[in-house]
Amino acid sequence: MTAVNEIRYVAATGALGVGVDAEALDQSLDLRPHFIASDAGTTDAGPFALGSGTAAFPREAVKRDLARVLIASRKANIPALIGSAGTAGGDPHVGWVLDIAREIAEENNLSLRTAVIRSEQNPDYLLGLYREGRVRALDAAPDIDEAVFARSARIVGMMGVEPLQAALEGGADFVLAGRCSDPALFAALPILRGFPQGLAWHAGKVTECGTMACEGRHGGVITATVRQHEVILRPVGAGLRCTPQSIAAHSLYENAHPYLHKECSGTLDLTRSKYTAIDDVSVRITDSAFIPSSDYTVKLEGAELVGYQSIMIGGIRDPFILRRLDPWLAEVKTYIYGAVERVLLLSPSQWTLSVHVYGRNAVMGRLEPDASDMPHEVGIVVEATAATQDLATKAAQLARQPFLHHGAPEWTSGTTSFACLHNPAHIDRGPVYRFNLNHVAVPRTRMEMFRTEFVQLGRPPR
Amino acid sequence: MKLAELASLIRSKNAGPFILTFDIMFPDDESYLRVKSSGVLTIARFAELFRCQEKHVLFFECDNARAFKFSIPRPIVQGNLGDGDMHGGQQFIPLMDIEVP
Image (cartoon, rainbow over all chains, first blue to last red; front, side):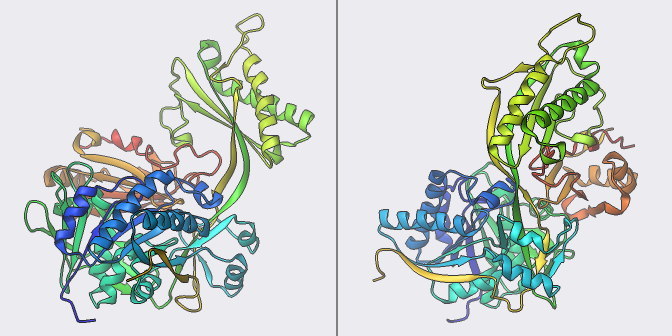
C-alpha cells in the first residue's frame, strides 16, 4: 500500500434504517472517498432490542438503506462498513443484517467479500474476567455479582478500531460489525494509514450521526477528509452547512462529558480542539488529542428479562376523584394487590403494578415541579409486570374492575370512575427487559472478544 | 429574562442508559456570556431543581460551542419499570424558567 496524504470518507446516514439520501450519496462519490460507513445501532431505543435479539427498524427500511450504501461502495470500488448491526449488535442482529445483505448482493449482481465481526459475549468467558477483577464499573453502574452474566438475555462488547482494521487489511469489500463504537467505524482506516488518532477519532465522533452535525435541512450526507494536521468536514446536499458552532455543539450531544470521550484504547480529548470555517459549508478541525490508556477496555452492554407485561390505558374526568387522586390511586392499588394475591396467589413482591398519570407527572415522575397542578382530566397507563405473560395478563384483567368501580365519597353510590380506551381493556406487551451493565471488560488480548469470519455474498469475485 | 427566552436550544437526552445530560445553547456570544457572567447556572441550582445530590452533578461551560452542559445519573435507569421517558428528551423543563438578570 502506497502512502496517502489524506483519507476521505462518506458517512451515509446517522442510523441505517432512518434513510440514506441516494442522490447526495451518489454525488459524494465525486470526492473519490476511500470508504463509506454507517452506524446501525444505539441503546437509545431501550433495552428491548438487545434483550430480544430484534431490531428497532423494519427490515424494508434497513434493506433500502443498506442497498444504497452497498451499491454506491461497489460503484466506487471502496469498502463499506456497517457497525452495531440490527440496533443492538448481538449475534441475531448481525445474522439478520447479513441475510439482508446477501439478498441485496444477489438482487443487484454484486460481489461482496464480507467480513462479519461478531461481538456477542459468552457469559462464562465474562464470568472468568470478572473473577480476575477484569470487569470494572463505570459511573452510575448498577451493582453486579457473579450471577449477572448467566442471568442476562444477551451481552455485547463494544469493539474499537482493531477488529475493523483487521477486516480491512483482510481485503473486505463489506465489513459487517456487531456492537461497535460509532466513531471507530470512521477512525479505523485513517488510523490504519497512519493519521493522528485524535483527528481520526474526532472526525468519527462528528460524522457518526450523519448530517445531524450540520445546520440546515434534513437529508444529505456528511464527508470528512482526514489529514496529518487537520480534518475537513463538508456536507453534500442542498441547504446543508457545517459551521464551527454546529460542529463544536455536536461534540456535546449524547455525552456526559463535552470534551473527553472514552474509547477502547484511550480517550479522545477535545479540550483544545479548534474549529474554523473554510467556506460557507465546510469546517476545519485541528488540535484534537488522543490519550492512549495503559489498559485496553471494552464497554459491555447487557440486558436481562424483567418479566412479561400487560397494560391498560384509560382516563379520569370526575373532579371529585381528581381532587384526591393520590389517595384514590393508593386505595385502588392496595385493592388490586389484594385481589391478585387472593385469586392468583401472587404476593405483592412477586409482581409489579405501575401507574403513570399523564397530565400530571407521567413524563417527569418525581422530578415534576408542577405535580400539584391538577388538570381537568388525566390519562392513566396501568402496567402489570409478572414472571409470565399469563400471570401479567390475569393481573391486568383483575385491575380493571377496581379502577372502574372505586368511586368518590361525594357520590351516594355506584359510579364508573375510569374511562377504558379499549376492549379488551388490557394489551399484552410480551417480554420486558432492563439494562443490567454499565461496565467495561479488560480482555487479556485486544482481539479475543471479537470473532471475524469472511463470507462471499452475491456472485463470485472476478 | 428567563433562560428559555435567551437560549436557542435547551435539551435533555440519554448519554447511555444510565446518565441523563442537559445542553443549553445560545445563538450568539452576547446571550451566552450574559448567562455565564450572571452565575445563575451552578451545580447547586441544578441539584435543587433536579432533586439530586451536588456530588452527582457534572457541569461544564463550553465557550467554543456557546453551551452549558449538566450531566446526572438517571433518576430511573432507561427502560426500567417506572421510567416514563425512554429517550430522556423531556426532562429539561425546570431549566426553562431560570431567571437571568
